[in-house]
Length: 610
Ligand code: HEM
Image 1 (cartoon, rainbow, N blue to C red):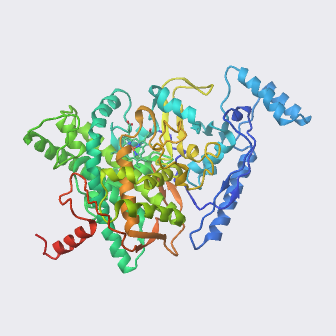
Image 2: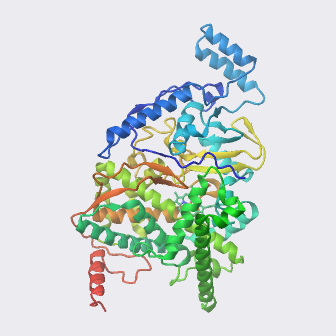
């Protein structure tokens, strides 16, 4: 049975009160290897109206309890052996800690098999919040690599850039997707995310070329058109004075985009709740629930037949699979009828989807594998982008000065028209806002691997079969690696500097992973989120809704809010019109500005348009 212990459904408030984390000196000299020095972490405060003090007090109490548990040694396996007893005795005799650390640190270095610092505990100890939060606090105590043990099961938690680089890049062949592949098997099969070994190599080689530059550029107009549909919804809400729940709207926006982009299917989920949209959400929720369930019920044979939930999952899976099979057949027919001249940047103008590219390329693959790959991209490219937009708008709502600076840029670059590929270079600040949002809310917050062979991580020997969580959350918020780590500050990235990525940030910043398994949709996702962000903030102001529940985090594959992101949306005054009306390749009516298009679509609704 796959171990699912650590990923329990947990939530906590990102509105963290001002709270100095009581730094515990590392309990083993090995922690100092990870570069520890005495510091305290100041966690910034925020407000969301109602219940602020209650949340703050609860949070303070919870944190004090956790700190006390860590300080009590409850998570710590006592060290044994002569050096430890000697060190303790010398310490009691009053020898300064610095000298002891120096002496015993050297002895540790000479030992053949240094022991990884170990945090031991009951699952209940971290059950009350999003699991990566206690991992962060344990990281502050135990350092860049430590073992987290629950009963017979243990995980290595990695929060050190050079160890992350070793696992993801330098020795990536020695690691598989482990637990992740087991959990996602029912929905992604051998798709690109869970696949390992030869299947992964072959599929990666087939899929990466499909996301070529011309394709991504063509997608910009799709992003614009989909966001325009969302703008219309928000326009109506602004007129009616109704608050909106942005997280679910972003989820629908990115579902509509990824459906068209991957297999040319219009879910139209921003307008309709069709059976297929519901089926996709049933599968997404099931994948997330399985990844956070302590017991894999779904592996019990009879359970599948008697559990109404599992029966619902099975029928959702059938509906989505049948739909994908139909889309594959339709696309095959299109390709057969096409006068095909396949080349590197091939793209069918009517159907620029990834599926069309794969079939046109002569990709020799079973329908099941193709379906697994499409499903993988649907899931990978949907919730991630939605989560990035959700947390970006949350951060912006709390920082009006950053929002104003962003709106200023968007007004001057875009004026009243849809973004084009050329604008992507010009929307520099918008890009930095997304870069910074991805630092504070990485999606997913943890990368999962399993060692396929024995290895050595920063001097620590580890065994084949070890399950490893690389905590991107810890890397991105480490006070050792970042100044004002918890502060939302897009200006930390120079406007004219390179786009930050894992390579130029030496693996302390991993928004899209790194090494051979890096995200294939990084450029797609960056443009998608910048286009949506720019178009939305240009037309509207966003505020956290008065009286809304506090925005708290919960974890699935990505970081969700517990009760949504309720916002009040108001129309902005019209920005100045910039004369250039250049549109991206695939817009049917390239000379129109957004207001022209609005007028046309209103006429069309009234039956006036040609
Ligand atoms: C902001 C949005 C996105 C974020 C933050 C994101 C993040 C990531 C990360 C961190 C990984 C590495 C996972 C690991 O190493 O375990 C990954 C892999 C992947 N992503 Fe994305 N992603 C995003 C959007 C997309 C989109 C739009 C697509 C498809 C069009 C996509 C397709 C994939 C695939 C197929 C993989 C697996 C690659 C492999 O294992 O070879 N992602 N993504």
